[in-house]
Image: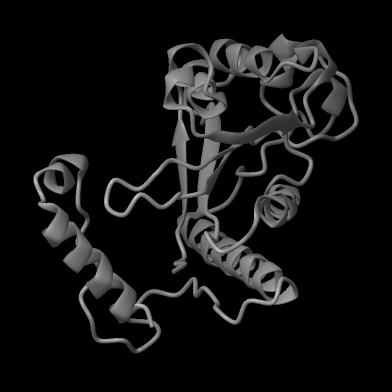
Amino acid sequence: MTSFHFEIKSGRNAYEHSHYVARKGFHRKREDLIAAGHGNLPSWAKNDPGQLWKAAERFERKNGAIYRESITALPKELSMEQTLALASDLIRLLTPGKPHQFAIHAPKSSLDGELIPHLHLMTSDRVNDGIERPAERFFSRHNPANPKMGGRKKSSGGRNSMEMRDDLIATRRTVAETINHHLAINGYEIRVDHRSLKERGIRKKAERYLGPAKIKGMSPTERAAYVAARKNEHR
């Protein structure tokens, strides 16, 4: 049973969060890391995304996002090889020219014990323009008249709230289409839909979120009944 989930958020504690994403330090004990990597790093980061995030926290403008993160649910039906191929396509589409770090996590569901694979993708808004800059200039204000003397241009700059909303809708559509393409080429008939229930004309309440405490308090019979009901609803 697969469903669509895609969210984007921003934050400021990039270095600490990158350890969570990469399952470094005390996060190793989670033992759910499937794959991890990075790309488009500036030369001064020395192939270490941690150096990028440290510099971002130090030099990025105070009113700017240190990083943005997208989280995408990956279909449980795909094999490991197929999941990695899908993740590779999503990363390519979501990070054009941007420094990024990614990881695939697959924790076990506390409800039914099934794996829940999902892609974490941290990105900087600073788009590559081919100009080498030291870290302190990399994150400074862009200088369109003399780009070498300013920082990299931010992909989020100059857009109003309506344009950003439209971009998010378009991104959600692209993510869903990419997932569906990989489901199709691997022989699966199931599909995901990025639209809300209301947009699809479905008159049903959104699924109630069950937190860890609620699930822990359920009996095995209650858990089995809940899982069975969810599967029936998604048929």
